[in-house]
Length: 249
Image 1 (spheres, helix red, strand yellow):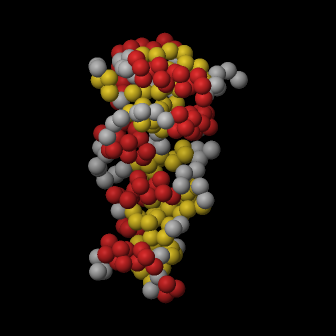
Image 2 (tube, rainbow, N blue to C red; image 1 turned 30 degrees about the horizontal axis):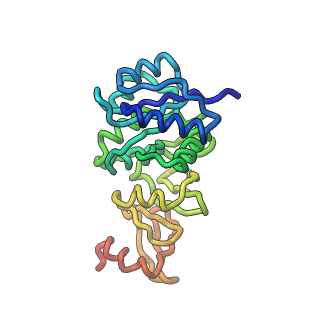
Image 3 (cartoon, rainbow, N blue to C red; image 1 turned 90 degrees about the vertical axis):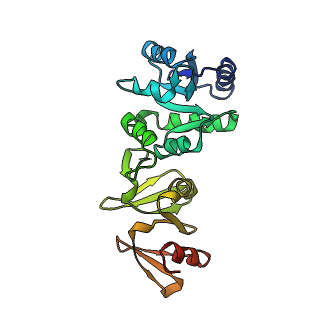
């Protein structure tokens, strides 16, 4: 199996050199096939080199990494953002299960990120329109979340997520009218993403969408009955905060 053709797009020469050195040291299954320092040069390099992986900076002199993506008719490569960008953009990346590296780049994070990309390379060609729409419309209600399994990539509406349940380093999503989806990220990762969209961690193993709560039963120490008629335990220390969020206090 040949090495993965990789393109590095960053306007800072020192940053490109650092990234290339790290890839050479820690990611021997990659080959840096080229580099570019702008949107225009990056677009030309993609068309010429047909890379399998692109490491893309956000801010460049002639535009942004998003501008570059919008100029592509199609994307046939895995994508990792390199950024010192603000928290809203990072949330957008996470919502689309898109990997990103924060500057200054940590070697351990680089290795973990590349490993995730390689594992999903065969089925990780996310819908570019979903990515760009989430970045443009970050505060709109109909937020999309991309969930990856080893077999499939699911695009779901956040408002259709009833609850999330922890299973070790995995999280199982329960959706309105759909079968559960198991993904290889921790519940904490999704708690950080979803808490500002009406989700609450009511138990060590459970994150619920407040809009899908049917009722609260005081029996058995406290149970939530969700709109799919499944029950979720409520931790004692979470009870008062839950009651406050539901407007009962």
